[in-house]
Amino acid sequence: MAFLIRQLSTASTGAALKSLRKKQGISLDVVAAQTQIQRKYLEAFEADAYHLLPDPLYAKHFLKLFVLAIHGDATYFLARYEEECGSCSAVTDQLRIPRQRTGKRLLRKWRTWAKAAGFACVIGLLFLYIGFQLHNLLAPPNLLLDTPQQDIQTTIASLTVAGQTDSEVQITVNNDPVLTDPTGRFETRLTLTRGLNTIEVIARKKYGQPQTIRRTVFLEDIGSARAP
Image (tube, rainbow, N blue to C red; front, side):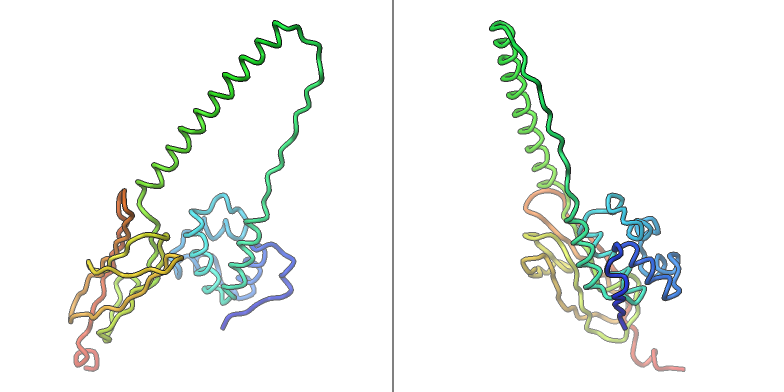
């Protein structure tokens, strides 16, 4: 059962998480073992050290698992997290240059230098933009698999495979294409065979390297599972 602690509404997200976890009597080591999230990320959440967290897609997934592990309201904490991350603003100081009398020759040199510097900045920004776009184009897409977990055993032959990726990414599950929604969510069902089954989920963009996650699921024989 999820708990929403209204008394913590004025505290930061990290302080609210830490207070709720202690109230539930759950240590960070227990949460890390249960969620398979590194302790340093759990500590970063509680310290509001968002710059130490991974990509936002992974960070929100980790936060959801963290909150559920301490019996909290995941929707509430995700909303708080997004609100606090979006509230950061950069402050830029304006530079004030006093007016000075400048000769025509010095003014002409300054204008020439300014034009050259401006052109160099434009070229530099253009190269940075191209490099950033190439990196995004060729880098593997993000891929999270919510279910199934690794190395599970079951007696049910039908299995749900669900997860999250980036938008406009192609997903295949055991070489069968699976549709994604506009946000990158996907879900499909597989029929298991008796014994060990390997589930391979691959996310591909039009260009670049694919991202692959594999899970193994063991389908037990119902008769042997019921045997004493």
